Image (cartoon, rainbow, N blue to C red; front, top):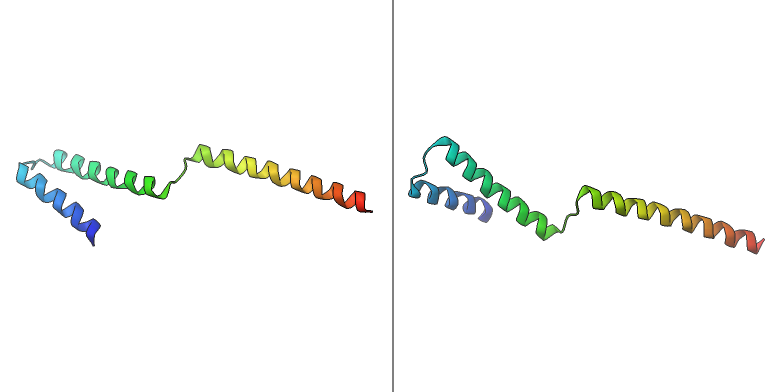
Length: 78
């Protein structure tokens, strides 16, 4: 509810300032929404796709090393 109130307050301020043309209004709305999106992403600490790909490759490599070490341990026990 508070998020929608935030957007409504911003829109009310825009009308008060006299921004009435459709282009100006739509660009301001997009700017407000982008700002809120960026704040949410920052709070959630979401990584970029490149960072996620790098991390997943590192995990795959570590899993391979673990399997390899487990096989070596099993061979030494036998």
